[in-house]
Image (tube, rainbow, N blue to C red; front, side, top):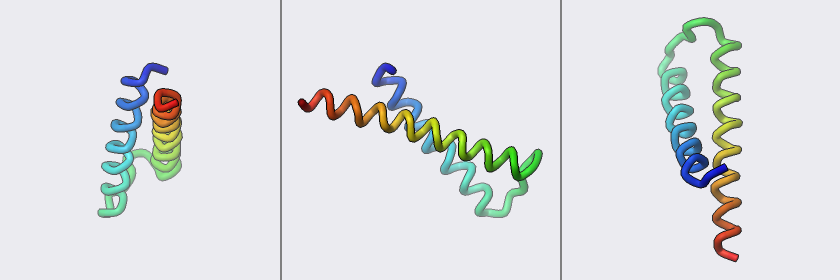
Length: 64
């Protein structure tokens, strides 16, 4: 995965997770159902973690 794509994915994923979590904490009800909302959060968190791992993996390879 190219570095720019990994960094962009990690940043957008963190931003999206922050917005969604903030809305839920303020009391917003899910549009469809809770299962879809929580599933979307878990999937977004997974992709964000994968992108962050690729970013730090490249950083470690560059420093060696």
